[in-house]
Image (cartoon, rainbow, N blue to C red; front, side, top):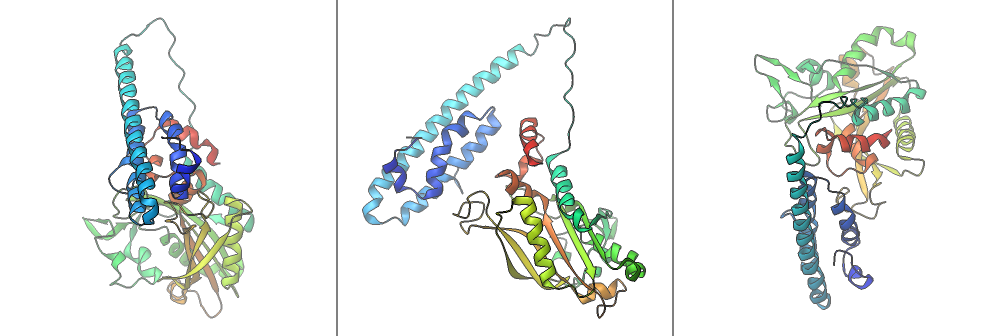
Length: 363
């Protein structure tokens, strides 16, 4: 029953029916026990798995359909479990055979040539984002990963009682409590504004990107990590408004996701911008029909943005009555997951050579 007929498929939610159709190919693609365990968790795990979601859909199904739907779900679960068990036996046998031949070494053979190295997929994506903005006049700025509270919080108009400044969210260096691992790449904005403020008139404004690693006290799961990457962007000029921000970001997302990419903006709050907004992209994984990644909404949040708060400009020594601008920041891992249709960001950090090789198409 891992491949359902049309009648059985019609009883299931659309995303569940698609998951059933993918199961045989996903199972055969499991080349080791780690991959099989991940697939097992996706389909038959206790929390959040397809099996668990199917049982939830059974609870709300019309009474007339419950019996037939229940039979389909029970059959699917049984077949998934049996198929996974069979594949596990096969992989364990293959592993034993491989282990038994490891000592069979022919000293007369020439040593194997090491494979050529390549940039990590996340680095390639950050380079790609830079390439999207470079024709618009943006250059790259960098800053230290060990930062001060002055640059990480104070210069960004983040009040002293803000939760982000607490030890529950931020990694502080024990021997230097005023030092911390930066929680975003926005401190680069503070440093650049202060450095270039005297040259602002001569330059006619500032526009730059700041890619890099950031750190927060997050639990590791499919969508969170205590270390991840961001790309910040900032533009300062005269007469800059929300229309400039929206036009720039809409252009960038179409360059990144394709000309048919659909975006929307929602009001939001960030201490360093006013007004603030978040930008969503029509989910490229399900085409907007609803899936686990977009939580059924058809949209995925891709970045936060807004017009630079006047206080941020004042702190940097820039007159907000003359100058204005916008800033934005996006998570590289989340963007990479969408571009490559990868369901778990931990795959980007596990150094599985097969996954990294497959991600060659991320360029």
